[in-house]
Image 1 (spheres, one colour):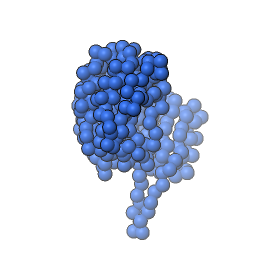
Image 2 (cartoon, one colour; image 1 turned 90 degrees about the horizontal axis):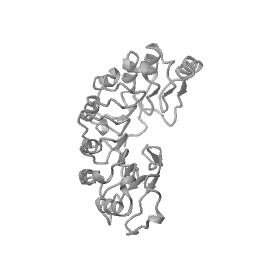
Image 3 (cartoon, rainbow, N blue to C red; image 1 turned 120 degrees about the horizontal axis):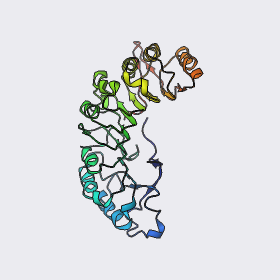
Image 4 (tube, rainbow, N blue to C red; image 1 turned 135 degrees about the horizontal axis):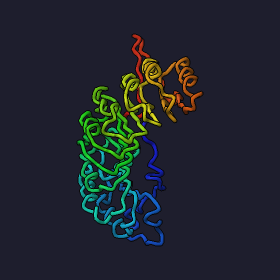
Length: 322
């Protein structure tokens, strides 16, 4: 499976795509109020007639950016072999023109533009350094993703969507000090697409000491989902979570049983396990154990289907890989 649609909203605002190069001078009267939308700025991913930096320059000229609250960065030229370094540099250079910016998403790119694991990324930390008031940050694509340990005082939501997240990026996020963070959502992916972290690399998330305010944790789209569930069964962070998302991965009865056999989960508001490889008996046990306590549990198998070879080898797949 791939990512099929662009973001429809971000930072609580509806997404609006800034007009393309064929509309050289969009009139202010034809545009929404600067603070009313999350502005999506993108060019064609293949053979674009305009570079992303030029589209951004047109945006800066046409919109009162002093009031802009959220930006969605779509495709830049040749995203399959070009990093967003120049895109990031343009955003950093414009930081004084974006004093109200609170939400930023890098690489809102769908499969028909570039598959998630083909998107070439880079070092995204300059964006966090340039915008210290940022409250929500998201990035899509793990190929060459660099995310060193940072400290950010205001960030409340961090989302990293990949078909395979490099272990050094996982460790960088795990080593970051994010005292205001409420929501952490990581798509860890598979080793086939560069997701080489193991359960031990996630230990700082399980401890939660650098994330004192965390109430939503997503560790999903992973081929090590059973190991993650086993670790979470006794992880200190679970006791203060309200929302736990372990969906989209290769979750089997072993992981779900370990999770249920550990510390109580009845304090949760939601437990999301959709796209899984659970038996009917284990799905039933999850529902009968948690739903009476008021936990909203999603155990929908979704489109998770195992494939078995003639020799008995069973193949299971994450929801978003390529």
